[in-house]
Length: 218
Image (tube, rainbow, N blue to C red; front, side):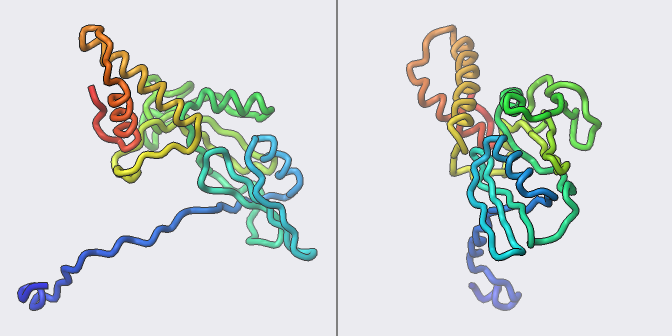
């Protein structure tokens, strides 16, 4: 800190990095714990725990495939009206595939819909341009807690750590590679149709840029 900073009362020390605060669990209210357990098990979600403490408390925890956050429900915890949870987002890289998988598991899923922009009314079908964040479908558990599928393939700038690239599942990685493959084919066509021997580097650059919301290679 220099003399002027001292006189002005300014602290020029480097700001400390904020402590990581990772959202770990979301509680949802249900009326029938066993019915809810069967439902979420039928979804193919991982059962992490079903523990009972005395006669008053029971906690059940599930984790969706590829998710760092889990859900909990049971008895003896915070009180809320069963079925009152809304806007529980499940982000997927391919909404048509995700919807088909849920239907194959016997889940009643809405038709796909999209919005022309934030706050706009829903329109039938997926987003025509398959823009990231704009295609949706919904389903509910037996109590009426509503889940919203949202297709996200490219994050808005600043939404992730630009210095890190990760994929939550094999399916997400495969979907990213397929998108890179299509884009690379267009890249080769623009280059006169010749095979690009450095395609692994191009794939890697494309996938990192896409996930970070940066300008994609041409």
